[in-house]
Length: 304
Image 1 (spheres, rainbow, N blue to C red):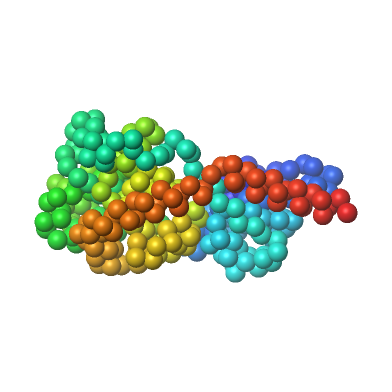
Image 2 (cartoon, rainbow, N blue to C red; image 1 turned 120 degrees about the vertical axis):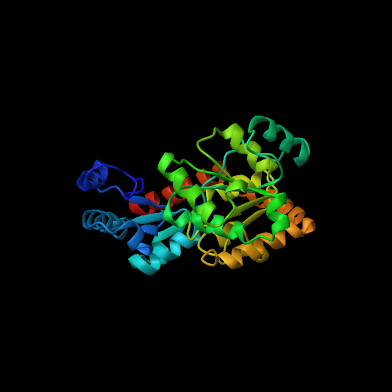
């Protein structure tokens, strides 16, 4: 069974027929329990809350659960009461399309500037969404707290799927923090353009409040971007360099960490090298092999 929370089908149809009629083992995939952890942001509507709680209860009924990170696994153990023996963490993979540049970062930057006229110089990159936990306003505030010389030297480029109202909301925040002239909001871009931004950025800045995995971070790391991330959830697993993490709930702490990285070129080079190596672990081949092994073990146990 895929994630019962992700599927937009009636609850009674979530469990596959072979499980209902043939007694086949049921394995459910868990991405995260973020709505449960932040109910005021996600479950303020009574119908949504009822639907969500009914669906996550299916994890308790599953024979086994596959979580996409150790953080999600521990949340399931703590919140849902699932036994640690009945849940396995298997990281997803990241496409090999994302890779370090074949040329220098400055050369890639010049190509990016030519393709995206609003980007005119070195830049800090954020890739995410308007989702509450992605903390976009906090990211803008943290950028605004940079020393003036750094704001003058580095634009802040935000990539997200933003409708006109979202864009207005973000730019109003940028105006509030007096950085609108240095903030660039980019709507949907394809993977080729995204790869170029990852490769060209001076720092990838990701002040997310909580993640099930953290795909944008691994994509950025695979492309050689020095990544700074919130010190929480699965981001601690992906970015194991403590110095590269910060309190994402504190804009001043985030701004200080961003300042530290921008002032220290050696630190950025170290993060770039580390990220390329670390990101090599997150492959679809490894994810597939571990998933097959998990399914096979459960099938063998059921056959006894």
